[in-house]
Length: 377
Image (cartoon, rainbow, N blue to C red):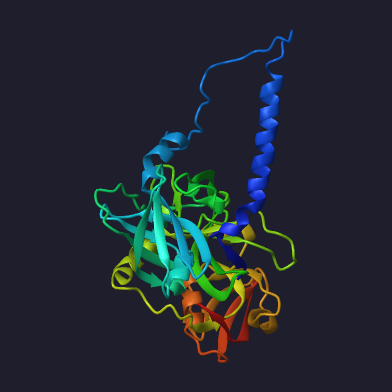
């Protein structure tokens, strides 16, 4: 599984951007001054408004943004001189906000959480209702809130590769209350990634993630990934960093499916789970559920299983001889029908135990035994 960077942001990261903005401002001033000089040049000009990009639903992106933006919030967390910023979505008119756990992690043991609604400059205090670190989700309550606009959670199970999507979030923490909007497609489904950042040694192995090429930057964490109708099909969570070869990944972001969030809400409302990371079983592979499309595209033999997309160098999977392109069809005698099923099975294995796999490599079925490693989740 690849390691992805969490997409929150810290206030100190704005210094370079402020310098760039100051330079741009100086150039604009120079251009305005020079434009007052007389010129004999004849140019064509138009006063027509630019046309909004059209989504497959027939809705333009400006229309979609206008519909959803009031329910998107900027989140700021301060604790002991440190500060993190991210994004959240209002899911109840009474002020319940869903976001990533890593956005509010600073406040887990005390700290101040404030929320700024889109279009506003007023920060409101919020309290932490519940958090589930293993799934990187958290639930907040805006104090004294009522009659707030809410997002609509869509059915992420109906998403297909190639669907148009729009991401909204507090990218780079540029200005609370004025989120950034980006557009892309669903690039892949069912991804399993290990998310972490340079500021913490804690990681989470997140399964069944939606992959998108819509630009996701630090600060986007907790914001919506929208379908063409403006429904939330995912919560933007991480972006791929460096690959195993040392090169930088491009346009690869990950979002927690909306259906996963819905399943976790009852637990979050009751306070969630312990914030202490636990060690779980780990193989070190990026896998995807074998679909008829993948089977046809790569001329694979089995009809179901977990397709190995990549193997982490030095991982238990690499040591066992698992290769990219292998299809895992059983584990300890249990038939594997999806990537998520295999991931959950591996996480439940005792660290150091032997996991007996049956793997298709081309047309041959071969046995492979892996010694289960450990990963924080």
